[in-house]
Image (cartoon, rainbow, N blue to C red; front, top):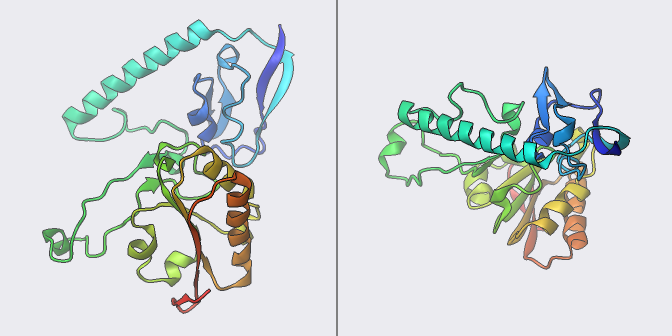
Length: 256
């Protein structure tokens, strides 16, 4: 039958694995560093994987393909869940996280979406006798705007931080001042050569975001990040508290 089905441009594909993670049917996998449609009958043609691709390597096409097999998809999901349960049980007993073979659920470890929970160490806590003198406050992964999934569960009820790459290097206490108790997204419009507006709009519009903080450098190129965040908030139709904080190149917070 002729029907709508996804098409993956292997030249554009970076192998990040976000599409495989977004595909609820399990039709996509990363093979040899590139996304691949493994089962045409698993693809429902609805395109949940399209918005997750940061390089727009996925599109629709109409062509001859097997009909979508919902029953086979459900059987595959059940088999996968059973496998993950066994893997989690093995990890629990062995004291190791992740799957029992050490692999991650997507092709690229750097894009494996997860929440991070830290022990809340105080100044006088015993953990400071070891390596946690200045503990990380990062609460999720990934952090790059281009890589983060739009509907990641940690966005629910989040105070969102959108920060320029250089800010964490310039401002010494960045983790405690800005990252703590926020979901952190970072990017550089100059280096990435991209407009983040659409991605940020989708994140704000499709999730229960409580507040927005933009941290930028004083240099002119950081204006692109600030403008993208402002446009995204406007385009989303949401009315939430927001602020812009500017960091000087010598590490000071400037008055806006």
